[in-house]
Length: 315
Length: 269
Image (cartoon, rainbow over all chains, first blue to last red; front, top):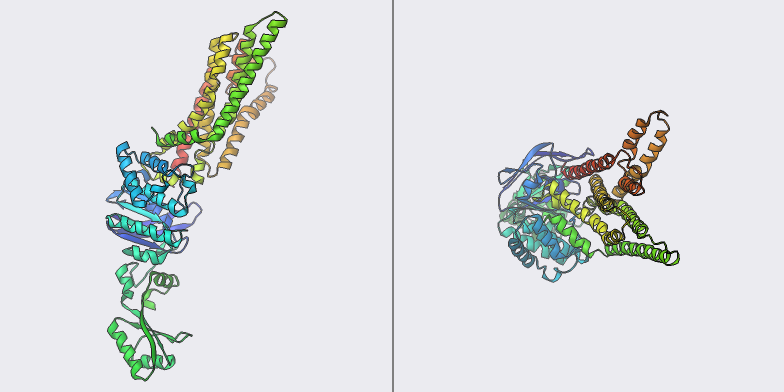
């Protein structure tokens, strides 16, 4: 379990990268860290890995204080940073062998773990290739292989899919999903939100070093809350007379904003029954309905709204 | 084996430029040996005055000076980017987020740097062995100078690695190392020469003090002193000046190592 307690980090340049952040990630959970560039995501991950020393607050991993202690953190936490930082003038096998030695694994254990990592990441064809000849996707797999050698219970992945094409991204995220299913705790920071939405169990949105509120008093949200639309999903309606339909529904007590310029109405309803009632009101007013469907709230919608200062409760 | 040393050895063995440099050095020494031997042979044939000792002396001191200059230039060059390069290619976080302590990382890097200096130094061994056979130089002077040259190479490697721990860019580390070496080996002794003009004309003790401050710790001083000894001159201040040089080098090397460790520890800030 990771416990980040009111951590505060100011860089020597004066930039306050993290401002009193707290976070608890239970064992086995995949936590998605979201936010714009410069929000403090990488800083938070480095703080958890002990690579930065906070001015205030602390980090405990599985009960051990790892605040500013990278060697202590290394026994519990594996960080795949962004940018990756790989030695380019050695072969993939040498790279894994080197980090096996860095982790002080015996020759037998080292061989076994390299074999396992190579099998999981499908690195076989590239073992004798120099790292600099690999594409970005394969380099990321290799870096992930390095993290996997340590068998630590916590993985911190900073932008694991950055700069990858669609196929490489999908492959890499499938691997992360497989790793997560093995019971490890994973914190993933990513800008690629649709994939992250599929991967993480819980999310938090960072901006300017602080958590953004998603709903009143709530900064983290689960994937099921997200897919349920935070208890007030949108239904999108297209009809022959949007203005008339809008007035009719407002008169009947429905909550919705005026139609969009292209004539679409967004009905806010707690559940499907309430949405059906709205549809019935429009139909009974004699307005022809062309399309009526539930708008699936995505992580991208939530993040954009929160960054624009419109958390879910204010919509 | 230290994993960083292991990696360094693998990389260096594959490094083509290293073999080119080594080859160039060996060819140069071979050419010098060949010419020296040819000159000796020719002199012996035409003048009938054969002095194998002179041949041995020429060969020994030429080789030792070539070795000293090569080590003075290349040993720090090969070490000046050891840590800054890790920063540049952003591989340091992965090393720091590992069970390796800053001391072990620095030691691994240091052994890598030393192995290069030793490798360059050892290349001169066959030529010195030939010089030894020719005679003309006291074996103690010959092998002491060889050892001191190696020690100088190791010291400079350690200092350069220490400086590289301070910088995030290799170019800055190279420039800082170059500036330090220029200051130590050229500017500081020159300042010392100017300073001797300020001494009291009747007080030789002042010269000795100035020599300790400005010259006796120079990377080339032991070589100069031992060469002078071979020419029949007395080593200034006896063997103390050489011991003093070695002591100062040890201190500088220790400082360089501590600087490297401190640079690594500063990564967590």
